[in-house]
Length: 306
Picture 1 (cartoon, rainbow, N blue to C red):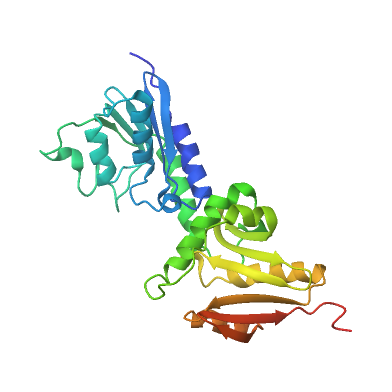
Picture 2: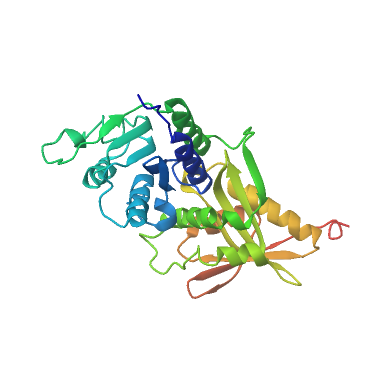
């Protein structure tokens, strides 16, 4: 009997990378004749594509690598039980063996819910092996969602730090999620996630990171006589935890060190809750232009207190 060689550790690595990007941590690997030919992690938020599950991306990449639409004889390793969509793709791709780690009672499509492989319309059924590396796969998911729900106060996992170039994708995804709540009532929102790479390179950018996941970000543009808060966003899953104030406090500290007298910002005129929040934090409205409310806050330095 041939010795079983699991590739779940590679799938777990892809899942961990997905978590860093702010994606649900799921990873997948396609193996052909003992060689890894494709691997991927979830990228639904990054690509703005609901089909960009780890399995789908890995299957697409494997088909390209082999130059064919069928993955006959190939194995698929995935950290979480595939959903019905991915299960159908696994069947259509003629994958020989499916190995998955954690079960998914909520959205799974193999042993749960739709049980795709049991349907008469499913023309190919792979061999299925569950529970492969289950403990590690489950722990990664549990830690990820616990981190999103953890209160800010007393959290030892929260970090406010300067952004790095490799954070750009996760920051953009966070900004998109934050502003998506306004999309149904504000039809002229700007593209808030564009240019994050340039912002990190040229401006002061901070991120709020909780349990390894970027859940907030702030872009501060520094001028000779003032600073502009160009963007601030908190992931909806982390709202109400004081992250916005923590990021603004960091920006104000930076202005004090540079002896800049004030910070300015503009927010959409329909975001009345934001105007109220800023006023509560000591900002005041200076003007209204078109769809923008212009606001400013004085920065009290040691010299202005004398």
